[in-house]
Amino acid sequence: MKIYVFGNKDNKQDKVAFEIAQKLTSLWHNQKIEFIEIKPNQDLDFANERKIILMDAVLGLKDVALLENLDQLALSPRNSVHDFDLAFQLKYLKKLGKIESVKIIGIPMKGKINLNKIIKIIEEL
Image 1: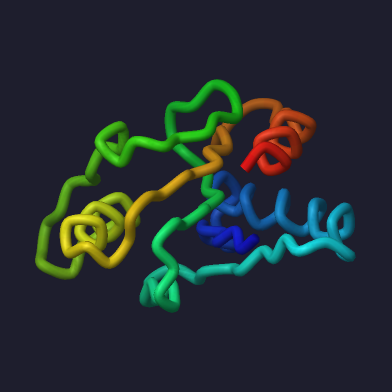
Image 2: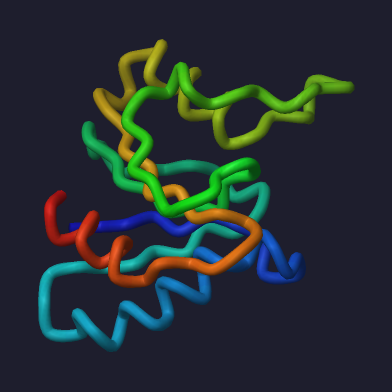
């Protein structure tokens, strides 16, 4: 299973998914779980995958959550044609029929993170 990890390593609150992925890599190093880091502004190339699993910090979450409905994601304000965020890109790829479903392991940007809950979510995927 591939889990695409999003965020910004230069931003304290937005790098949390990378830190979690690093901890979990050692836990599942012999299993078929691969964490793939996606850099800010990197093109989303899911290599013909129809069902996508992501992990990202989500503003406003109080606890770790599995988000499965893209309509739950708010689009950020756009000031130019270059301001496209992850939610926009995912909704656009789905509309084009490039992806079938997206599951996002949402990590709170603030507060304590329940690592055991993240592990349970991944094990149930």
